[in-house]
Image (cartoon, rainbow, N blue to C red):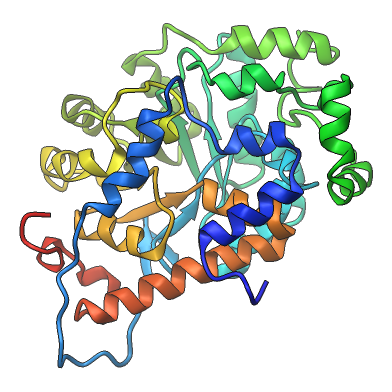
Length: 380
């Protein structure tokens, strides 16, 4: 791991170690993948304001996200099928995040269950909720997250209907994988991945199997997941979810100023500017391009976070300069997980922390909480 210097290095190693169908799942967007690519490209267009002959000593990246102390303003984003990048992936990533002092967010569509992650962590993690048509299942998920002492609920708003991702369809993605000649070959060429997966019982959606009455086997699971996302989800649903949860609530998937103002009226603790990593509406703007507009639209009435396109500590800094109080990384930690398990996730975080720290210093700042648009080059 000491030879790994960038997130791209981790990505290259993960591609060699993870079966194609699961690597592609993490590394894909909807349709033409234009929005997925724009998430990264628009960060590169932002230029930083270099400062010289300023005191760079005693720098601090510590801050808070929704009132929780973090070692740097970065959280691990909720990602589906994380446990298919590496055996027990969610559990390992949660442990790495806890040791690093940042939040870990568990997806509804995780391989390891809420209880699995709670069993290997000592500090509260966050839980991401998809609202399904089976309301009893949704209420049960919320109650399980409360029982696990999750400290925040992240409600995803932008997956009422599943965007089409061509790679997943062509790969015949499933969890666990199907035993077709193509899939067997993909796994056979990744022997270490196979050995680790044989050593765990966690190979399908742990939050669903055994908890939804209508899911009794893998075939019914496939039908259930394809039919259960609720196309009628509305702002009114946020109210009953907030009441049932009773704790800190973060709304994920805001990409429009009007929606941001609606989110403020719900009383949520934070909103996440996000286009679902370019995996939903292809042709939508990048997350970073909408961030300053949404920050201005909400006028400080709610904490604003950003998800999508972050591949370096410099990207984190740019988001903070535009007014984000926290950021999320999905693919970078998945690349780390696929490349080296828990140590790979830690390496991804080390890379981002070092890049953020050095860049902040060269921009003439010592405290991450002081970053603002004045640290960006005029015209950015």
